[in-house]
Amino acid sequence: MHIGEIDFQVRDEVLVSTRNIRTTRASKKLESNYMGPYYIKRKISPVAFEPQLPKSMKIHPVFHVDLLKPYVRSTDTSRSSPKPPPISVEEQKGWIIKDIIDVRKKGKHYEYLIDWVGFPPESRTWEPRWHLDDDELLKTWHSSHPEKI
Image (tube, rainbow, N blue to C red; front, side, top):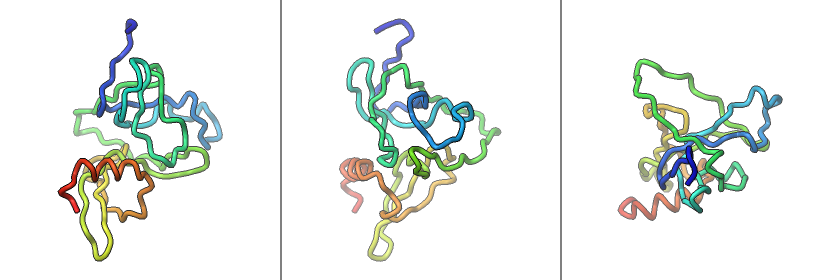
């Protein structure tokens, strides 16, 4: 490991550099430098990591450590940031799921309590299955919560 390198672990939260990601923003200068936070899903090598990105992003999910930055949550509760707009990547817009908190049956269908990237916990929402396009996240959540459903 070199000086300044960070050794991320699975489930650490990171920000991903937008340096090599094409978005629909008209000017690269106006684009955010980082997006996220995302959880580290897998460590590929000492310098390559796979964050848990939404499938809708349709980009290669492995990043060099230089393109990742540790995410540090603010402890100052007096500061609340405005809700961010949907993220646009390659002509697609949407909000990014940070985590699935719970599931419930509603009629014949299931709804998931979703924690959204960039939103405070009080903004969690119950979403029907067909609103969610991250099949891998759902599969992982159900395998780690077999008692649910």
